[in-house]
Image (cartoon, rainbow, N blue to C red; front, side, top):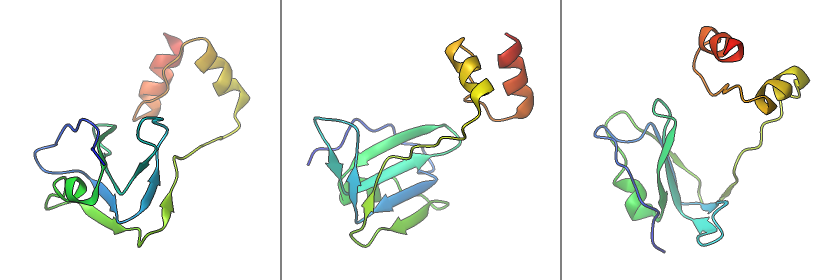
Length: 107
């Protein structure tokens, strides 16, 4: 299995899930063993095999051994209809603070 193009953070990822059956939404590569997540940068710098996932581990990385279990993409439905209207109108609510959300909503 070939990993996707990776953008390595100098200090490693915040979280690495490994030793699992990871289901992706990439039809060319629908399965992986490991995934690295950089929470602060809001990116997934690596999806692929365990060896590549290990390369993303830094001193502060939380490593989660899936022990062969499956990891699926998350689907979050907070079911707030006014927010859906804002998104349809083009408000970007992928922000870190309430103040940023209010500013994006006003814009």
